[in-house]
Length: 227
Image 1 (tube, rainbow, N blue to C red):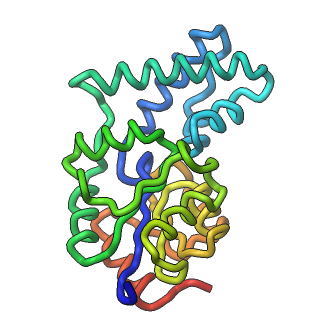
Image 2 (cartoon, rainbow, N blue to C red):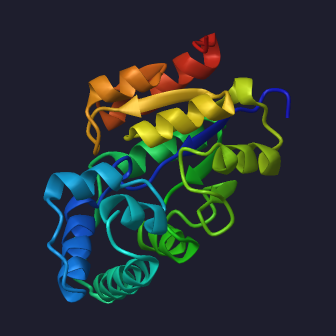
């Protein structure tokens, strides 16, 4: 294990272009329970959190019963779209190739996401990545980002220490989680939070395009950019 490193990847906004799908499902859920629908930007801000935390942040002025109804409505719509062959959620261009290159380069790979485990399993099956990930961490068994538990669980499962682990994500929750776990935080420029916020949160590097990700990871984990 001495020569191995771990690359943990976020899904929504990092590998998967799911922003509009999540916005549409959340706005529909709000309408179904009789609440004003949140703006596109407001929903985009909470992508990456576990669903329960996201709903609590979006709708702070309603009680737990209403939160539960929003949760159910969102899940129902998400499952409906997932079962639809025309499901608009898709990988970002170059995502498959970047993940494959990382895998072929000898890194252990992990997923750290706000999706529940069935959503991750659907992702791996739909995009032919079954068996590619050595650890999959979700809110099913961990607190929501930016709590470090997801990364800590990934390191524990793979046996890789913090100084050989990188977390790649598009939101401040990913970068703050990396900071909280003491690992390298690598931000991406095409996701849900702007680059300046990722830098302010403490990212060690910003990836400008998916095809650059393997090279950036080699630099970060090979040279040790962590401070």
